[in-house]
Image (tube, rainbow, N blue to C red):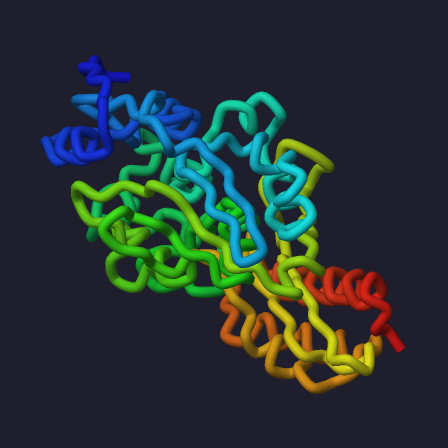
Length: 331
C-alpha cells in the first residue's frame, strides 16, 4: 500500500473539488477503499475524508418516500423502524450483507459504489490482464475459474459480477441516486461493461453521491429480499432476488410486481420479463415458476457459473411465492 496524503473536507463542494485533483479518493466508512488499497487495485495519492460533512447521515421517511443520506450507516438504515415497515426488502438486503461490524461502519453511498469481488480484478500481481483495471489488457476470468461470475449483462471484455445487495432492492423499487446537481435512477446509474468495463457508473469526475430516494408504494411495502449463498452468513450472493407485490381489490390478481436479481449479473438486474408475465394473473405455483424462468433470458455461462442459470429462477420463484402467501394471493 502506497503512502498518501490526507485531507478533511468541510463541505460537499470542497470534497468534490479535492477529488478532481489527480489521485484523489473519497473516504467515508473506508471498508471498500481499505480493501482495494491493500490489494494494490486502488492507490490514491490523496484521501478526502467526508465523514464529518453535516446533513448527509439523515434517514427521513414519510408517506411518499424515503430519503437516505449517503453517509447513513448500513446498520442504522437496516434497523430503522420506518424503513423496515415501508421498505422491508431494503432493510433485509442490508441485514443480509457483510458482517455486523462492517454494517456499523460502511455507508450507504459507499455500499452502492463497492467494486466487484472478482479475484482476477483483485490480484493485479498474479493477473495483470483485467479490463477494469487496465483497459484493453483482456479478461483473465474468461477461461478461468468462474463459479462466482456473472451470466447476465456480460461482454467479451468482462464477466465480473456486481456484488452488492442494497442496489438490487433499490432497482426493484425505482429508487434514484442524488448526486447534488442531478438525480439518476439506480437502474441507470450502473453501466453494463460492454467494451468499457472500467466505467462502472455514470458518475463523472468531481461528482459524489449525497443521498438516495425511494418512492413509497404498496409493492415496496409488501416486499422481501431472498439471498442464497454458499454459507449462511458473511458471504456474497450466488443468486438473490428482491420482490414486491401489489394485488387488485379482488385479492387475487396481480396489479403490480417488482423483481430484481443480484449475484448473477454485471449490474443490479431488473427482471422486467418476469414482471410482465405475472401482471394481470393470479398467483399459483405453476404460473410463478414458468414466469420466473424468464429471469434468465439472454444468460450466458462460462463453465463454472452455469449453475446460476438454474438457481436464479428458483430463487425468484421462492421469493414471489413467499410474498404471494404473505398477501393472501396464492391459489
